[in-house]
Image 1: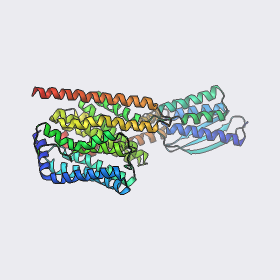
Image 2: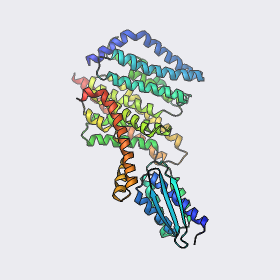
Image 3: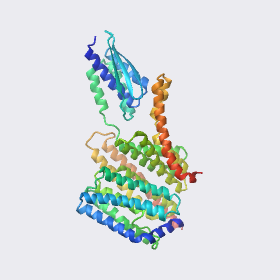
Image 4: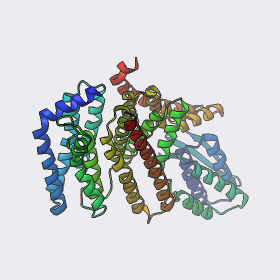
Length: 244
Length: 255
């Protein structure tokens, strides 16, 4: 727990100007994707996402989180996601065309990287020991927002990686007492449902098994179960705080 | 008595039918029985000898004694027990109702054109099944949750790579590595991490070739039986390679 916050403090203290620059670049590219979605902007965004993932892998985990156990595994996890973005760029997948759907929810997710430090401050932490905009969970939420707002067909592998990350984040709430990670967990459940619902909508015209209606209902039940699990965990966390 | 053209037509259809079954994970003696049944419905005796990649079929007109032989490639198809069952039922219908070849062909086309189970549905159910394995092997609920999402990652990667035509063995290595890498997250928590790691690549175990291989050997189709077992063994080696790559990185935590 102490190591966890020490590494975050060291990372924030040393990289805050770069984090601001990266966050500003992300905001600019997102804005350009909305108003002027040219091929150059889309390529730029994919390169930015790859850079962001490699940053988390290389700078965050391999340099500043070295004292943590299994930092190399987590670095590899993020490096793989960076490679998936590069593969997307090379293969021309996930073209980042604006879908025009779920704009409000996507906007909420785009704002999350800014909400993370505010949530930390609200919980009584002080800089540099706070969650910041260029940290794994903030980047994961931003990625989900990006896929929601700009991907006609979601990269399922990337979505599953983020789902896995959200689950790990939820476990961190239990084991390390970091309630900020609820933001990611709470974003992932509806986002996953929306991703899959879009997929079901796309296949609705073609004959499928089970039928799109049944598939949609199954997804809703699964997301409801996961959501209930998250809610129970949240309530349990409140009890833990009450006991302290 | 069949004309040469009719005999060719019957053999061509049975070759298509038999290779479809063999490619869909049916053991050899069942394919032979089904094919001979369809042959009998048309008054033709069918003999079939199968290998891993191809099949040799011979049709003999029972009246004239004329013989035609074909060597046909077996396509690589996804395993579907429902489809196999439907196609077996078709062979019984053909014999019982003495269906003409055109009608059998039409029904065969209808059955093979039926939609397959949706890949997203398969993804979710495979995740749940693998998480259940974790629980069955004594994993706690944290490990079960981690294995569920680790399986989603590994299986989604497998589906995408297969869709892009990546080498079969490479697919298994990468999928096993990704699933076990994600499952290794369990090591950070106070849970049954070893169970999570061990059960995460179980969804890749080639159960159908293993079972068919054993059935084929027991029923005397030694060559194809061993071919299937060796094929399954190679896939298991690939799973071991992928899992080993993760274990090499976390070995200190497991010792």
